Image 1: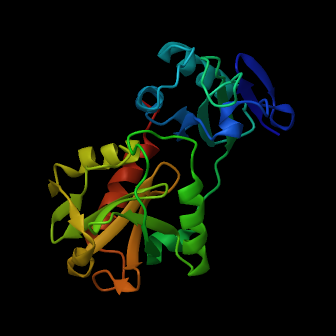
Image 2: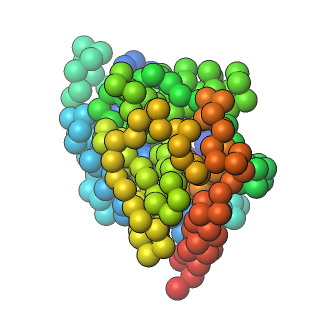
Length: 279
């Protein structure tokens, strides 16, 4: 059993509650961020809190905590969960209780939920995975809101065909991002990803930073019709790190195996995270 932080109070996870009248329950109105630890240190915590506060600003949600207070709440929650060697961390700002059930009144809660970090299947990284496309455009893409209805539906569609992710495409045929991931492609030694109408992934930003010394980088719109022309592809996220993609809607990427550039990025990223917090 874990220990959660619920608006200033630490409680065991089984006893943690939020009012059924909170707008996060009634309307899906809230924002959150998700990160993990390496060496029990929260990875890029300041950047994740900045994104959380930006998400709140994007959806006009008042947060009653400062950046430092959120930081301290996360660190204390980690400290109180010493039973976990590595952790997943969710930071949530709820919409609060509303007298008319729809209008925010600035009384939202801050939640910090820490759970055990589970390893994903090794075969994902050695053999690559399948993804599918989903014609969906996220509402307010710069905000990581708790409204995940489209993501849940898309993920269920992906699971039915043994795909691990659904990638959003828009009405013009441009590729944006996955339900919980960003997507990248390689054409020879050029790393290509979009920067339009997506949630700015923290892992994505780290990947772009560690890639700039080894690869050319193109930030641009990506047409669905280009998929068959790419040599490699991968998705990224805090919990997935870098996962090679070898099948996109039945279209084989490259030779159908994880590419050398993707494998090199996995190596570099893991070297970076293995040392995180030890210096």
